[in-house]
Image (cartoon, rainbow, N blue to C red):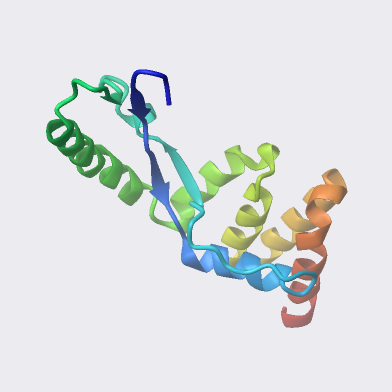
Length: 153
């Protein structure tokens, strides 16, 4: 928010319930973590997929109805097709993997995505290797996740 205007560049992407619930289920063994619907599994700013569109900006002079309508149409025309284009584990996995170094629950999402794809051995190997790489960050998730895999597979 600026002194004379507000700019909006919304995130568009996916919230994958199965991944979020699996992360919460695994982390419950060590804490009171619970599933949160408000976090996107993967999202980018709409400006990244529609770079030629001007930013949505509201000033005191803005026709609010027209600009809000433009924002809604942009989300439908560009955001929805983008979300649909990544709406499979196979399409989502490489995008999650590109962000794994940023931490922020991306390693957990990769491990769970692999698991939900039926790639149990890959999920196990990823969790073990990432735990070695980032033990302080990843141990709260990785230890119960690996234990779950050991018990169930």
